[in-house]
Length: 423
Ligand code: CA
Image: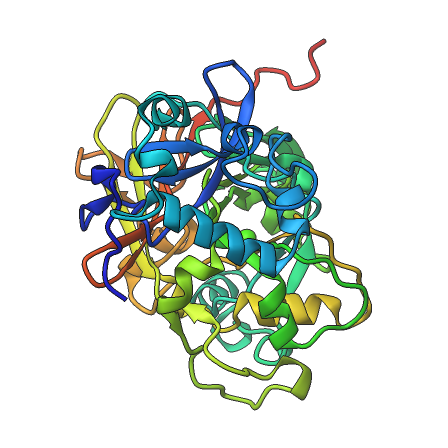
């Protein structure tokens, strides 16, 4: 599908992350100081809360955009999702419905420049689950933690391993992240100590958002239907806390500090042209997890790191198609023992690393456990994140003359508190 042209001319550039083909959904502070639902188009945000109040758009009998999150809209279901996308396409297309394009006053009220706009979490995150479904990442980490012969646990090629995380620590891009304290192996003796994390890291992931609730096991095809859209996701990780605590129940405090997501939900509909297959299977998957079509996406991903006051360096470049399991397979697996899933559930893909060294989606892998420091373009060296560093994830699917972007997924590292229990 080629670029669909809009009368919002900034959306027609091949490099704009938000052409009419995209239409990603977010929440922003409107002129009245209230948080409104909006859709990104070119360098503007179209205020959907206002357009719904004015009767230009209508999703159901009752308003769904009178709340500062997309959950109520998601609950309307896939037919409503398709209908809104069609209505917005009509209103924003060059030569389309002129309700908006032909009314200067309405246009001026409904379009807000993205520059300077304050963005919020686009959804109420119901629950957050983090998977470990990238084979290169799991192999690298397993090799470092357990040795090359035990790199992949015996279950890894048969199920997408995950753990239940915390929705309460999911934050929107731009939120500062404070270096945590935790129990870790003391550098001075064999016993643990409670210290500020010394090996604070990122994890480059995609987040899938559940848009339709389910109760009981669902198939991979049903799971794909139930996914509303995708965001970039950085699962901040305290490696020294993780290495001490993770056996046998997996990460807990190591992943509890924060998880950052990008501000725009890119819908499954926008990503349709970029569907691709999972890699060849070493073992045939059991029926309830079998691939039933291309359910990964060809999305270029990169990570930049900027030391305080300095220019960013690209430290990793990879692609979402490197995953071994799709989000639909993860969601199907999640429900297989009967877990109900809710609208607004967020599933982290697991760190997305490629086969090559520069394709690794965490500093743990890039610096090989701290043994091989990276040299940034600024000349600074890094093994793990330092205070003042700004980390950013970037994602782009390249279409025919257009780009589907996600907006940045950034966070700056604040120093650990001197005393986390000070009152
Ligand atoms: Ca993770």
